[in-house]
Image (tube, rainbow over all chains, first blue to last red; front, top):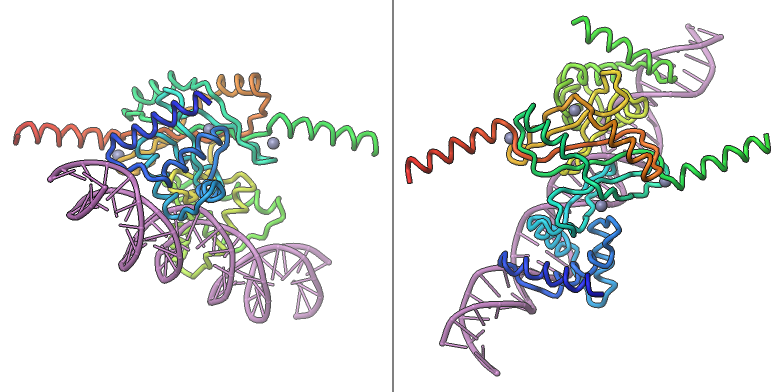
Length: 161
Length: 161
DNA sequence: AAATAATCGACACTAAGTCTCAACTACTAT
DNA sequence: ATAGTAGTTGAGACTTAGTGTCGATTATTT
Ligand SMILES: [Zn+2]
Ligand SMILES: [Zn+2]
Ligand SMILES: [Zn+2]
Ligand SMILES: [Zn+2]
């Protein structure tokens, strides 16, 4: 896995440059985050995945590591409506967080890679004198799968009723 | 206050139509929400404000009332990065939640009334087959006050150093 | 005014996240 | 390589937002 390796090295470098030690616990946490890049894991989930890898790790250590990685902008902390913090690798060189599609039926989280907020941010800075550093944009709605499921259920009702 | 009165009546009507009883606790909670329309109160804050009004109210009742009001789309539940739920009256006739400017320095929350996401939502529906029902958009950055404060501090340093 | 189904409030409980502190370890400099 | 040290770890106590329980209460209907 070429890409993961180079990301891994980059992250380790960032940690080192910021004066943090490269402990096995931190390496394993980053490893998990890289492996589950597509997911949006909670601290608890990361904790279990690291523990499953081989040795143990303390939950507090996971929280501390995630805090550091967030400070260094290696990951982004996201909070959807359930109030549980989830973490998202900040891979790309984009300075801004990508968007999310949160399905109200099944709870799935899909990513929207395009930013598309550039014009809006300019308006905000002009009209509100607010210096935008980042954003969080989540669309609430019905995902493709659930919409298709709904359609099936509907035709079932029509057939049977 | 004409506007508050008519909003109050509208909300009470909505509750009644949905089959909920109009208890004094619910009325007081709505009253507080209307009075603090500009704020983004947590359940705890609402609880204290209702209690301060006259009689007591249970915290659980506040949570239950807020849940009902959210279901009926009279209020919107918001979760910023601290993970605490905050509630926002859904006054206007806009079907979509307005946006927020969250200051990273002082924690203030400002509102952005314009929507501006119409085009983006159309793109999302087309490209991702995701049926958008609502959204949450928060810009993280530095508010006007804090930016001015920063400038002052900076010139102080220049003068003194 | 009585019947009743909804609602209330006190309090127990759950769970995400933080704090504490003694033990430990990655790095630095000899 | 070794020792010194500052940073880090993990267990568990703690905090706190939010939920669940249940007997007592009350808004509404008739
Ligand atoms: Zn879905
Ligand atoms: Zn994401
Ligand atoms: Zn500010
Ligand atoms: Zn608002």
